[in-house]
Length: 177
Image (cartoon, rainbow, N blue to C red; front, top):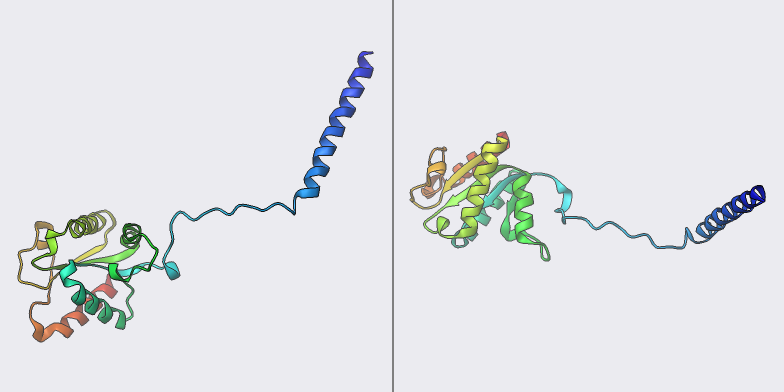
């Protein structure tokens, strides 16, 4: 009787496995697969930026002029104003900071009064020290630079006579970085 019970158990197990297999085969092409959602919406082309341009709200139009000038030189520039609708500003700024070769901060009388610009300054400095990236302070007003910006060679845009030549120099410097 033990042998008979063992045979019946084996036949039942094989029948159960076969039934499960045929049930799976019947529905495997008809079920909908879930797609993995991306963690972050990446910018188009997903290439690194040549320059991350940070500026105070009062300097937005000048920042945009500088960014357009750099783009005419074939450089990819991140400007917060150009973040597409529906994207999260802080995530896009973080992504750009992580994937840029040069951080540029426009220094005016209002620059260090904005908390988000102070955050940009700190993030640019950190990436400069950690990853060997370049930080270029750009003077747009006659102001005293903060200590870690003061030790770097700034670009002075306060003299309008050499404005375009200075921007050309900036573009060449970014390209060499």
